[in-house]
Image (cartoon, rainbow, N blue to C red; front, side, top):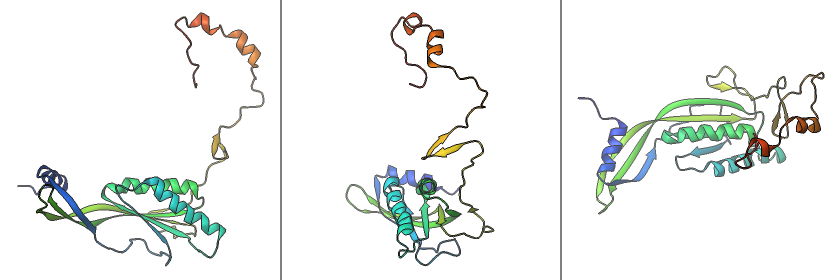
Length: 207
């Protein structure tokens, strides 16, 4: 007989009208070497709001550029179970807001203890222990060990094919010999909309 999985246990508890009253995780050390002593820790949960997390983290990282006394150079995002995807999303958005960040990512497992009780009379429904996937991502303004597994260098936009201006990506210009069509010539060569669409106005592509 096969051992029941975490999904089967979760379904069994739901069918018994039980609700989770507490959830604790093991306080294991960060699996990333060389962390600063005063880094910012952003713990991402399943119900966390990405906007609130990024507003706080971005303010702290950008404030360091204006006030050297804060000396905040590193931020660590951690998340487990259903919060892993949201953790990665926060990191990718922050890397676009704050340029030049070195990254080290680590995947690991951690133990979670949950206590459930009856949703009707409040009687204890039991407790369980689960092993869930977790992720820990370090973003640093200072260079990191490039030989460390999971290291990613700062993102640099290529200027060969695209040109970025004010946060907008502009496609490269055409060759100087390309023929330019004047608006007057284009309007004369295109039949009126009323002749082509008798059922009413139809929006042009891109509108």
